[in-house]
Length: 398
Image 1: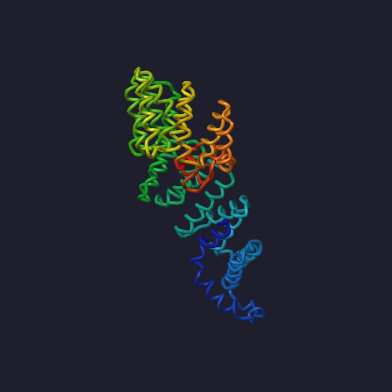
Image 2: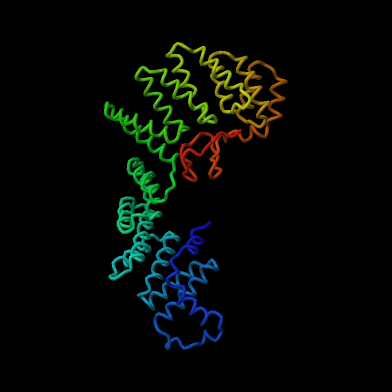
C-alpha cells in the first residue's frame, strides 16, 4: 500500500467530518454550486469547501490537485489546524520534508492548541525529522510527544526503531520494554537479539565487569527466547574461554531441540567443545544419529556432510548427501555438492542423473534462507530481515 493511500485512511479528518459533510452535501452534488456567490459564505465554509475538494482529489489519486486545494483552504481559513496537519502529512509523503517541517513547526508555535492537536503536530514533526534523516532532532521530537502522552504507541515504536537503526542498543531495549508495558505485547525475539547486541558491545571493553554484564544479558536472552542461536553461541564461547567445555556442550546441545532448523549453525562450536572434553567420537556419534533421524532438517544433514568431508570421511559424506536428496529432492545446495562428489570420483553417470533431476533447483541455488514474515530470500542468514526488519524470522529453504 502506497503512502498516499495510507494517508487517506489515517489523515486527521475526524475533526472536520461534520463540516466537510455539510459543505459537501451543499456543493458536491449540486451543479448549481459552481455558480454560487461565495462572497456570502464565511471563511470557515469556503475553507471547508476546498478541504472537501482536496479529499476528493486524494480519493481520486490526484495528490498534486489535493495539495493545491488544501493550500487554498488554509489561505482562506488559516485557523483550520486540521487542514494544516493533513497538508504537512501530504508534503512528507511526497518527500517534501522541508515544507512539512515548517508546517508542523508553525502549528506547534500556535497558542491555545488542544492537547490532541499539539500531540499530533509534534508527532508529525518527529516523522518529518526521521524521514529527513535528522536523527537527533527526531529523537528529541518523539520524546516531546511522549512527555505529553507517555502511552503514544506510534511514537514509542518509531523511537525504538530509530535507536535500533542507529545501533543504540541500550536505548532500543529500554524503548522496547516501554512499548511492551504500554501495549501488553512482547517481542521476545527482538528483545533477545538486542540483549545479544548489548553483550557483544560489553565484551569489547575486555573487563571482568563487562564480561559479567555480557553473561547476564546473554542468559536473559536465552531465558526469554531459548532458540536464540547467536546468544547461545556467544554464551557457549564464553564458557569455553573460562575452561568450561561441558557447559558449552549443554548450551549448544539445547539448540537441537529449541531451534532444530538452525542447529547446524552451532555445529563447529559444538565440535570444538566436545574436542576440549576429549570426546570427539561422542560428537560424531551424536551428529550421525541426529542427521539420520527420520525428521532431520536438511540444513543439519548438509552441515554434517561438510564436516565429514573436512575430516576426510568422503564415503560417509556422500552417503549422507544421497539420503538428503532422497528426502529433499528439490534441494539445490545438496544437489550441487552431490554432483561435485560424483565428478571428483569420475562417476559421470550419477553426476548426470543428479544434475538432470535437480537442474531447476540448482538454477535457484543463490537462495538458501527465507524470511517467514515477508518472504525475503537470500544466500546468507540475516538475524534482522533487511526487508521487513523483523528479528530472527529467517529459516532455511529446502
